[in-house]
Length: 260
Image (cartoon, rainbow, N blue to C red; front, side, top):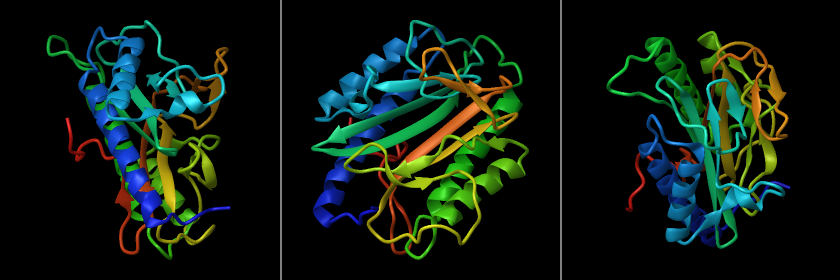
């Protein structure tokens, strides 16, 4: 059952989202050539704890890390390792916070750049990332009362596939709140004006999960990491939002969050 949150519950989710945004910002600021996924994971964990939260992803059975990190052809759920980032890597960071029982979830993808070296296919990679971010925000814009899940889905799909890329079909956005993953499912593909009607106070994690090539993915032997089946580049952008009467309220925008 999809729930509309009370004002008190939304206040707790806003604080959860603020912590998630702060942690995501700190991780993104530390992405550079030579840093490892495990180092970034530690940064995220320390930031979340310092702000009074806990790592949401550690509530997932069997998962022992604070972030998921995906590199190049990896799509989602990549495990942090000692692998050091290299110039030209396309890196996605996905993390979440649970604060007083309330979860928020966010992700962002960036290009690793060194001032000393040119990035191969720089313009192509930058365009790929720009399209994914714009697709996610297009989906967020649809998270208003009276719209339907299909409006979010169609907005994301139209932007991604209109630029020649592919929306991953088997990995989708979701409700978020008391649990990290709740109803409803929020696919990145669909038909406008279809699906569940949105109501003010619902809370969603809206995601653009997409590949430069085919939409098909494969699960790695670690049973966590999904990669594009054709090994094309992959991107991930995600924000947790509150459905609003006239516009969505974004909980996890790392670019606008206040606090050290």
